[in-house]
Length: 127
Image 1: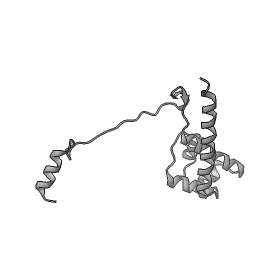
Image 2: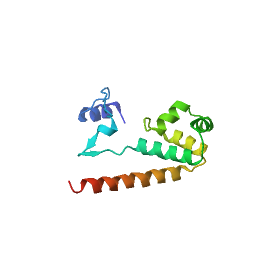
Image 3: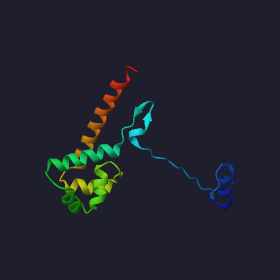
Image 4: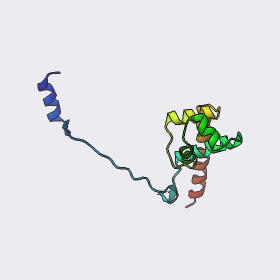
């Protein structure tokens, strides 16, 4: 593409190459955040609960899993409490430490989200 073609293309678009966009998202307290009068289901909370459930089923401590996953104890604790959003790499490391396939963890999360959605529908369908 020639420099003239680039300039013509830039002139036609509403955005110049030097413009930057910012987008701010405010994350509110999930217990106080209604969605059309309903509480929001947050994936980070469900993932954290599922990780904790599986760890407890194995009778393991946070310290054991954090050491095996090479994740700080504090960060793993925040994940389990739903205060931090886990990256795919971190989830893979924790699942590996728990000797649990990632697909199994995600299936458990999916089942729990579906259960909570059904409860919300039942609760708010008569409103």
